[in-house]
Length: 86
Image 1: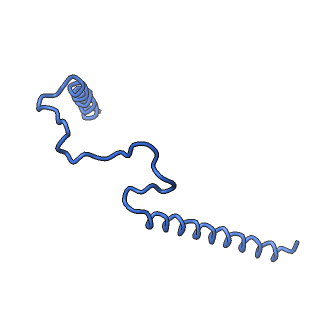
Image 2: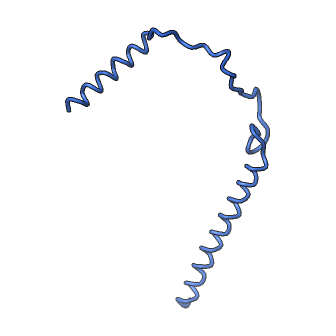
Image 3: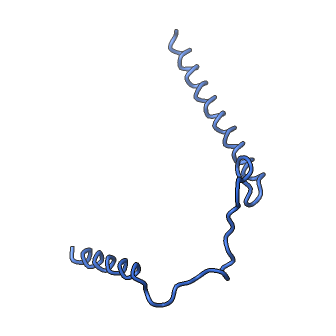
């Protein structure tokens, strides 16, 4: 096969791959824009749909840190102390 023909075939196949990628990207974008808020990308949701609360029903902890928070604070202070002395 002549070298110029091989070059043309290679460039044409690269252009075809780019064109396919653009078409697939446009299809994905079209599907995303067409769907509304909360709609799934493909198909319909199965089971219960998760909803985020408004904030009225959230349980916030008190001002005093619990055992796990104390442990994290202790580890963080040790890390910062080692980082500063390095």
